[in-house]
Image 1 (cartoon, rainbow over the protein chains, first blue to last red):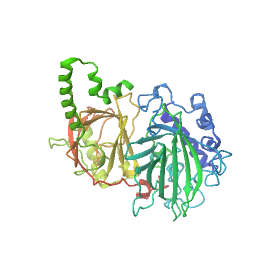
Image 2 (cartoon, helix red, strand yellow):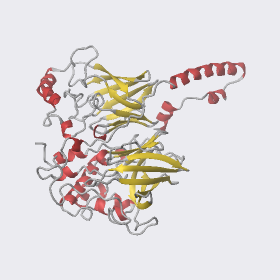
Image 3 (spheres, rainbow over the protein chains, first blue to last red):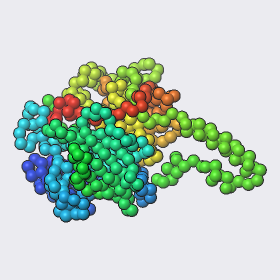
Image 4 (spheres, chains in turn blue, orange):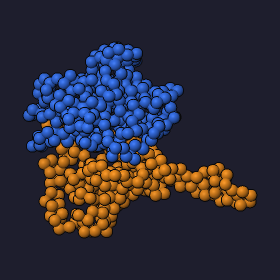
Length: 274
Length: 247
């Protein structure tokens, strides 16, 4: 099974879980992430395990191609984040240092997940009831928790290219936000270095169904093993930082960027444009 | 793999070369090399491809000789059957109106779609405003094809200051332009990107697709650099097209 197919199956498992109404609990591939080990994260949804080699989603030999251009090992430069990563969300209970993971949107948990379009009422956009695949595209602040995240950085900007839903974030090395910025899901990000810690300040983050916008500060530190530790904080109106989430981006030279088009999945699930 | 990058990116420095030289010949050569380095420096000062760009023209791909694309008869019939619907934005015919990636080179040559080029040593990104799509060009020899994908497999190299991108494995629902100009399963495109002065970029597109065209052909598109500070905005196609939850 190829990596692309495996990811499609993984996503299909997630969508099946959504359809069952259980969301996180019904989708092991996602639901266990909050307390996951490396091995757990790659566990395939149970209904698809037999279709996968050893029940695990991982690239096979043929997919270890020259696209892994970041090389092994990672750059020794603590300010060079260029490369490809996947993630591990650190369990925590409201502050740095661990503890059980909070629920999405709750104390110590990750930012809230967007509500599926069909959950609890009329479908977004009105009209007929959406099918499973129509909820494949989730729009919220991209928390760098994708199948893979590619970081491309130069002296002008840092780009976070997330494979899942082809989400994209862009932080510019500048000292001021855009004036009159219209809120977006990814917000307006500016970056600076504090020593070897990359600090990204993102404001104007649109939240579906809310008038208020979110404001985050994220601190990225490269670890000796090439992984990147991220501390994400919410910023309130007074400017105070509240710890929101810790994520580790794990150096993954075995991954390569795969085109992931969530807009395809509605039709893949059998509902065509009418 | 690392050998490829060394070949592409590591240029011999004057100091490195000088270690292997002796005497007067060494001095003479150093002088010559310094002159060469000056020329190389001048070349390096050539306009960068980095920046936000917008295509000129009408978004249609045409041969440079001004004639119609040399479609084979069957392909021409199929193209004529959909061309008007593509141009009219018929969502039942054009997958891009259902928010599927338009593919390449269609997206790049659309004069309504700004994109930013970001260059790094191992990869070059084309960041499109249209539905925040990204085309990733990996620098190095074309690898084993994994596809098809909407943007195809993109392998890049530098020919002097010209970026050469080898494109294969294009998705069958991605047309070459907004009129639905077709391509075959084994289409092979070679795109050459060259800055022209500080404000323009010229891209030649060589289409080699014997399944669909009677002969290889070339198109040329001019792009204009957008003013400094121009940002690529977040565009969510499903929201823009009112399709959230519908497809």
